[in-house]
Length: 374
Ligand code: SF4
Image (cartoon, rainbow, N blue to C red; front, side, top):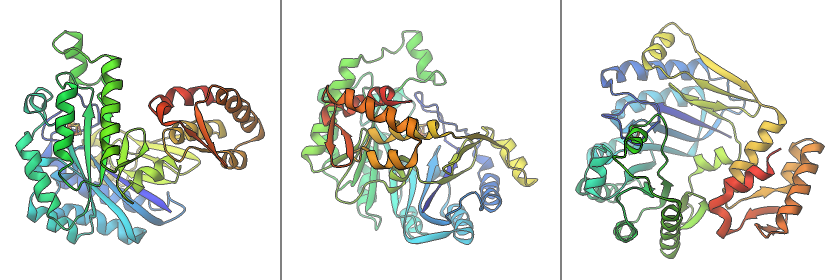
């Protein structure tokens, strides 16, 4: 089974903390959709296993596309690949794009999961970071979403944000608990050098939160979501019942995926490829049938290191037999020896074949993974 990621690199405006590749040349959307359709056709052989179990429209703001434009892309995908009947098909949406009609249209073309970019629930903070919606609009979009036929709703949140104190974070989360949201992704604010926020912090206009506040808010979110019946299945992801993100799980389980569109990455077990970051060049290239990708061939060590980093962040943990079977003897010996030493410090739960980060250590999974890297 494989996955497909489609990058939609358009946003009304840039949020100040964002470093994803996106632009506001919305007049290019129609040409971009045509280019994406061509890329899908040209790269259909990239995936050896043509059975698609997840499709993810990420961005950018994919909800700037009309349902007809999304359908055009999905139609090409269905023509080139075998999309499973129960495939998870996600569209990232911003609250200002949600309407009852749009959701009916999305459901009619097979979109069955919405990932809503809420981020914060405070008007001042939303404005400070140049988000395009208000708290009232978020509530309105949730009301519409929860009365639609699409039940698999995920909400994205950002914490450890300057201006949001613990008390306010708790009340915002409790407000969200009134809704039957199936999945939450909660990431701490990261300050990238390519973001406007970086320069605001440099100039002293914004003061970054310290590590204590980050840890405190991580546990506020964790405790509250768990108390409301959500299961933490990765450091930053929580789900109710069976609503884990199958697309994310596929990444973490190192399944192959094809990434289409500017700046999209692909992985086919042996190599990683990525498209360049220039919307106009991308459209021009595809008009001439050209695909401009960079390729990195992955060694056993690369794949092992990646496996350790990704899986240690999840509830599934590391599989001893998988590492023994998939990587060479030298890597496996290193892994076994290092795990033995680290286990004396009690960082992991060992359940049969699996080595799983303890709940109290999950937040520091990246740090633990670095020690295990070859
Ligand atoms: S955070 Fe999302 S909506 Fe904001 S600029 Fe980045 S991609 Fe666009």
